[in-house]
Image (cartoon, rainbow over all chains, first blue to last red; front, side, top):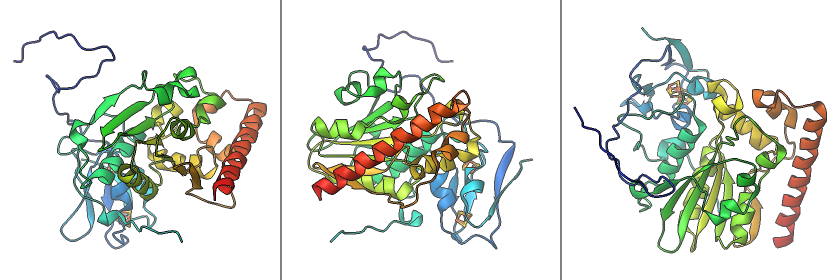
Length: 92
Length: 240
Ligand code: SF4
Ligand code: SF4
């Protein structure tokens, strides 16, 4: 258990050290997650560059896949793929 | 002759600063997307990204001078120290608490920054990632201080579906509400030229924050956008 402490901050509320802040994981899975169709994908990496949560990463075979722990299910990757290779499907 | 730089998404650095734990922004956050792309642009340039300072720019003269603060918008500012001067990046999600008017949307922060002595200033939008990466790298490489103003669409504040973040950003650029340009040592250059701009109505209709706007107000906005664009174009011609 971390004990709570009090600290005076400078005017402007700039927090210059992490203090007791913890790294954050979304925790719950999104309702819908992206699924790739490798027959349509041309590996252009647009889905990767547009993901705000850095959830998409390159796999060893050159295709892209999602880390569902980071994904929030926003659907930008589905929307921005020119080739319709990403579809949003329910996550079990 | 112009020199061209070619970018492809596969050749940007794969290192993620949000990983392995992620962040707690809303889904489809435009600011998170812009921050991620900025980090990718600065990777390997020697910038001390981990030590960069985040602040609400209430004391920054370049912002205070402009209409943004007067209109109640408080964009986040990231300042990174360079060899000479600093690189200021303004992540602007136009969060004015639901109230929106033309003064908020058509502010000209790069012009103000250029007038207050910045060597390089530009506008960018995460819907055009390679343009953004190019500008951040130019801003980092220029001799003095630099300023980049990034428009970050906000699904919650602007009222659109999270999956449309990139689409709305693209509409803002293509309808010329937020033209992409850069000012290097006083020389203007429009970086995203399109002879046939999209109608402003398309941008306005995509968001619920304009729901209360009358047709008259939208026409006034359109006229102001056109006047802005003409002014920008005239400045480009003068300095070439
Ligand atoms: S945007 Fe579409 S085609 Fe490009 S890498 Fe992603 S899934 Fe493949
Ligand atoms: S749904 Fe959104 S968060 Fe999930 S992988 Fe696609 S772009 Fe990233």
